[in-house]
Image 1 (cartoon, rainbow, N blue to C red):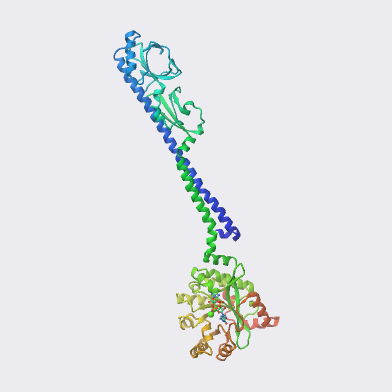
Image 2: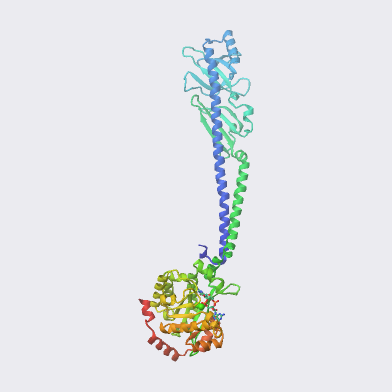
Length: 550
Ligand code: C2E
Ligand code: CA
Ligand code: CA
C-alpha cells in the first residue's frame, strides 16, 4: 500500500499514521472508562433509591403496627384519658413523634400534647395500595419548619380517626451511614409530587441535569417515590486512581505505537530483502555489458549482461553481494525483468541494428520452474528492436535444477520463440555432461577455471578439447569465459574455440561505454545494415515475428 507513494513521503506517512493510531488507545480507554464509571454510578444511585424506599416502608410499617395496637384500645376522643393513651403510645412507637385524633374533614382535633391543628397539611392525602383506609399525607410540624409524614387510619364506623406523624428526617440514613456520601443526594416525594424529605444537593434540586446522575424507585406498597443522585464530578473523583492507571497504561501503549511507527521505516531499510525491493523500484540495478568476441574475425558477436547495483551514493555493488539473496527470496524474477527492460531501453536500438549480435542474460534455477520467464521475454521484447533470436538465456551449472523435465519444457518454449539457450559455467557444477545432453541447449560456456589452467595443467586442456569435440558433434556453439591473456586466446583459437569473453578484450562495461566501443569497432552504415539484415533473414529460422505471433 505504502509503495503507491513516492519513497520520500513514505516515512512521513508512516509517522502520521502512527500518530493517528497512537491516539486510538487513548480514545478507546477514555470512552470505555467513562462508560464504566457511568454504569457504576447509575447502579449506585439506583441502589441508594431502593434503600431509601425500603427504609421508608419499614418506618411506616412500624408506625402502622403501633396505631393498630392503639386502635384496639378504642382511643377515639380528645378526653384526658385518651390523650394519656396517646402520650404513652408516642413513647413506645419508635419513629412516631406525634399522635393526632383527626376529624372527618381531615383536620386534627387534638394531639398527644393537646396541640391539635398546629401541624399544617401540605399535600393531598393518598390511600395506600394495601389498605384504602390507611391514608398518607405530608404535614408541616408545628415546632419548626420541619416536615413529617402523617399516616391516618380511618376506622370504617368511627367519625374520628387516628393519625401518626413521622418526622421526615426519620427517613434519612443515619449520619455515620452517610459518611463519604456528602455529595450524594436523596429525595423522597409523594407520588403526586410533594416533597417529604430531601438531603444533599439532590434534595435542593439545584444541580443541573447533565452534571448529576439520577436513580428513581417507587414503593410498591405506599404512594412514595425515592430519587437518589450523585454528581458526575464526584463520581469521577471516586474512580480517580483507576483513571490515572488507565491513562498511564494507554499513554504508554500510544508511545509504543509511535516508537514502532518511527522505527518501522528504519527497520525496513535495515532489512536487506526490502532494500532489494526498493532498489528494483528505484531502478538501481543496472546492466553492464561484457563483449563476446569472434576469435577468427575479431568482431563483437555479442555481450553478456552482468548486473550491478548502483547505490544512491554512486557506489557499485557486485552481483555476488546480492544475487544469492535475490535468488533465495524469489526477487530474482523481478530483478531479471527489470534488467531486461533496462537493456531493451538503453541498448535496444544498437543491438537491433546488428541482427546477428546476441545479448546474454543470466538466469537462476528458479527461472526454470515454470513458464514465467517465457512470458516475461515475450512481453518485454515483443515490440522492441531486439529480436527473440538475439536473446541468449544462460542456465548455470553451478545451481542444481529441481526438475529437469520442467527446465526442458521452459527451454523448449524459449527456443520456440527463437531465443538461444546456453549452459553457463560448464565443468564447474556437479551435473557432468548431463545438462548438455538432457536440456537441449544451443551453446556451452566453458568455465573460467579451465581457461586459467591453459598452459599449466594437462587435464584441463584435455577437457577443453573434449568439450570442443562434443560441441562439434552436437552442433553447439562454444564460448570461453574469463580469458585474460593472449596465450589463452591463441590456445583457444588453435583448439577450435570460436568465441570468447574476458578481461583481455574488455571487462563488463556500463551501457554508454559499451555502446561507444561497439560503434567504434563495428560502425553501422546503411550498406552494412542492409547486408546484415539480409544475411540474418536468410539464416533465420524460424522468423521471430512469426513465432511471436504463434
Ligand atoms: P558469470 O555468469 O559466470 O559471469 C562471469 C563473471 O566473470 C562476471 O562476474 C564477470 O565480470 C567475470 N569475468 C569476466 N571476464 C573475466 C576475466 O577475464 N577474469 C575474471 N577474473 N573475471 C571475469 P560478475 O559480473 O561479478 O558476476 C558474477 C556472477 O554473478 C555471474 O557469473 C553470474 O553467475 C552472476 N550474475 C551476474 N549478473 C547476473 C544476473 O543478472 N542474473 C543472475 N541470475 N546472475 C547474475
Ligand atoms: Ca553467465
Ligand atoms: Ca560463467
